[in-house]
Image 1 (cartoon, rainbow, N blue to C red):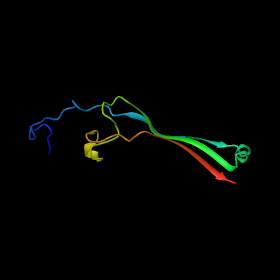
Image 2 (cartoon, rainbow, N blue to C red; image 1 turned 90 degrees about the horizontal axis):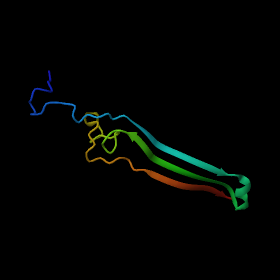
Image 3 (cartoon, rainbow, N blue to C red; image 1 turned 45 degrees about the vertical axis):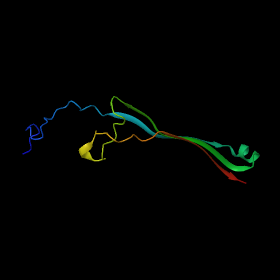
Image 4 (cartoon, rainbow, N blue to C red; image 1 turned 90 degrees about the vertical axis):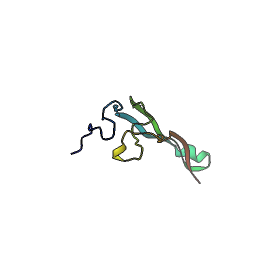
Amino acid sequence: MLNTNDGFSGVNSNSYYVEDGTFLRMRQLQIGYTVPAKFANKIGLSRARVYLQAQNIFTITNYSGPDPDIGILGGELTMGVDQFRTPAPRTIIFGVNFALK
């Protein structure tokens, strides 16, 4: 049987570095508007749409690290160890879709 406090590694286990890793995150949002056909026709288009898309908008957490959702190697044995990992970037994209007549 494995005893985590046996001193074999020279370090006793403790909860000093354990933190609450709960979080709330808005990962993706897309808002779009389709231009009415009457207006699109006036500018030489059969249809038009504009949109704004954002990813990794916000994270609400008390976790002190950069991201409560990452581990050092991505495995279960290193959950919460976030050295050498960077959080996913926040991206914002503006786009236009249209079709010519």
